[in-house]
Amino acid sequence: MRRLILVCIALVALASCGSQFGSYTGPKVTRIVVEKSERKMHLMHGPITLRSYDVGLGFAPVGDKVQEGDGKTPEGVYYVDRRNPQSQFYLSLGISYPNEADIAEAKALGVDPGGDIFIHGRPKKYQSDLIDWTLGCIAVTNREMREIYIMVELGTKIVIKE
Image (cartoon, rainbow, N blue to C red):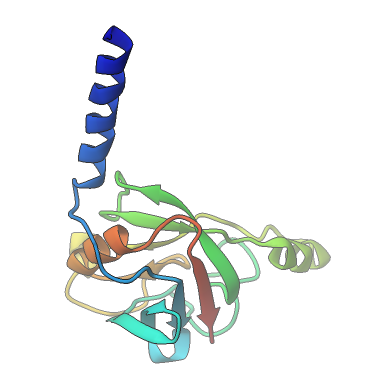
């Protein structure tokens, strides 16, 4: 009986963690598409666009990320590999950069591909502009990030295009 009570308490605690930022009961987000040249990000359910957002990118937005510190947002196919509710940029979803191709390209050039690429909110000094200011991440408003955070699950594919 005691074990059953402890399990119930643990389940209630886990359930309350998920509701901290709200809940989403609509169609599943099956992939995220980022169009860098348009400064747009789309949450998709199959061929249907569920939501679209204006985004800020790396401070050197043209071209594919090749190495750490180049200020570019990567291009390619990745997936959401982690969630950070304690992000210094409000909330964040990790992108699985670098993938094997990114690592091979950087290795051939003798450089470090970098890492820690996220979709995240904006600190106060960047909340009113859509300028490209990140080190390679994809930035949205904090309100939008809250919505994205509850809609997108771990493992969701993300396609980042020029």
